[in-house]
Image (cartoon, rainbow, N blue to C red; front, side, top):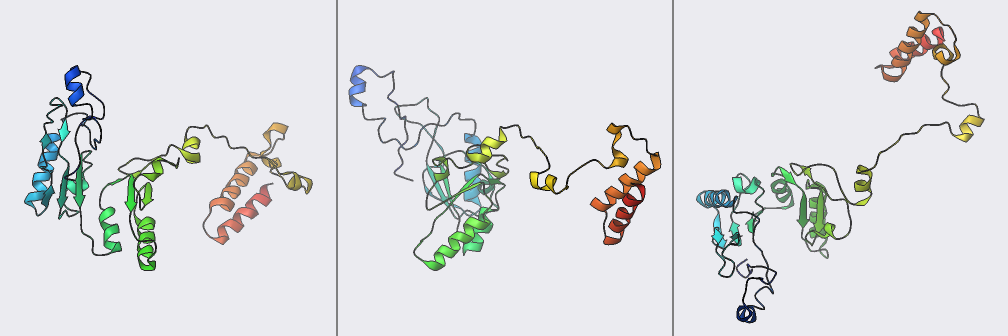
Length: 256
């Protein structure tokens, strides 16, 4: 965290030729750029101060905005590391969108899962472990299975971005997906089509409209028979208990 470099990844067009000579490499090796706006800075300061006052430790960074010597108009925030964070602290359940890392201690895999699922947000997650250790591999698979997140990388960060998997979150991180087959389906107009299969049709099995309900053929059937047939059909499909379904079959046969 302490070694992260703040700055602009692009050379400034406002530099003079002499300044360009001395700052030609200033944009190289930059780790963190400026934030879009300083509007969140007071809130970030408040969250960090609250965490420290309730037991967290500031291990690296200042936890405050940073004035860059070459980009004084940029909205920079000092890369910050806090340890001793607990899941009941407001900073642990807030989307920070800032270069702030939080370290939370877990006693075992189950506790780690509980901590991970304590936040209302669930877009992406990463699980790190030793694949050559059978016990550790079991813990990794347990975390992957039980952590509630839309996407998870194992021993990596954000790898799902690069391989075209469906992208999306859960809970407070939204719903729906883009990318992959699931993403393509979400922008398609689906159409359900039902027809009798050839073999079934050859065997005489079909979904023909019962004669009692076949209004298109102009068959005149007493109204009570139509009502009784429909009532029986509903009971066969949706009634609770075998007795009521049997009664539904009887009603359909009696009125057909």
